[in-house]
Image 1 (cartoon, one colour):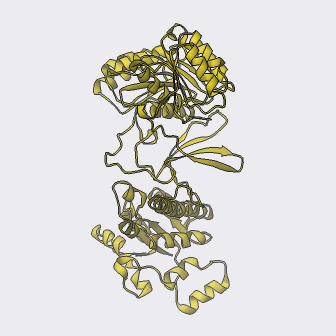
Image 2: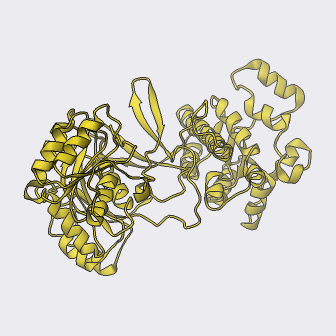
Image 3: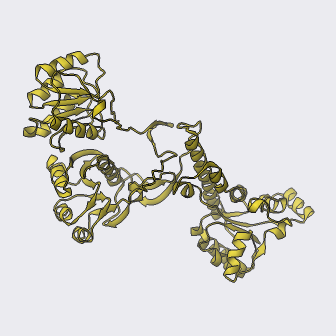
Length: 515
């Protein structure tokens, strides 16, 4: 048997090479891999002994040779292929171990010029791996150091790699080649300004299996985008507690993204992706208290997220409530000690994003909606609005206090399932109407939840009011200002009703549907 080793990831390669030699396998390696093995006291044969050609173009051309590719691609069950190898004096290669130089991590850690990025693209390793995977009927194509023990076990027990394992190795190899090419394509699309390429490559790396999916009868797993440069919940380190479930992760992501949308210290509490509490305050503990006060009953069994570090003061109150999980940018040692009293609380720490301003690429700025047989793809909804872009359409202009709350409510409502209406006061969410088929119904629910907190509050709607009934209802309950996109053929009627009730109303010219 013959093996060819060419690895950029050196983990475990010395032990593998030593074991292959001990099993009487003839081992060849490319120059870089051979040098690493030699430094570890392991001598293997050079790939150039097969090609009888020196390495060319600074190592770019080393294995492109019939002696290697014919040895890999020859079908073991085909007499014609065997005769061809014999005629040309070529030996079969039975094991190909390859790992490529990573591409996405290199272009993701700093700004990389296009010509430099091109030099980072692995070619030889991909070709070797693809050829070996294609002939999995007779060749083991191994690309994951985690599979080295399996390879060794197979050889020890059977003297060769079984057909089932060769097929499994090939599947992983093809996926690796496809993902690598996908990362390169995504980078080139990003550099070229192409948002929706003809072939959209979705490159994800599995982080872990989940106990189950959205329901117990469904299976689930967590994957991370390899081209996502900024930090997200998928990068979080678990500080304590059980692994979050599929549903917990959905809610934690919604809560963390919501809290992170605000510059001031902010706490978000979510259930079924929608906020049941949201508040901003200079003091983190007060932000938490106000978020919890938004709907303390519905907050039971919810998840909570902070866009700041959790300190002892916050943790001391967190443990008093039966939350499923918490996500934050960090935890003080004192906070960790207090949270340990709630061992069933999953606590996640999301690392900070790099301050170098690198833009995400690939699918990082895209959102997806699954339909039967395909995906609907869109760019992610961005807020990108400030006070200067607001259009005051009523006779009364909002006060500074109202304007501050209107901007808070407008930022909040885009995180709520459509049709969505929220009521806010003092940078605190006091009422939410989510996922309704009627905007009046959404308004009624939001005002019902706000109850006696509705007077002097503001209201935000994710899309225009098709009729004036919801605006009149808000005014009757004491709301003093409304923010909405505008754009209805009945806008004049809505403005007239707002003026009649002495409301201030502003149009943004932008809706925020979230289906």
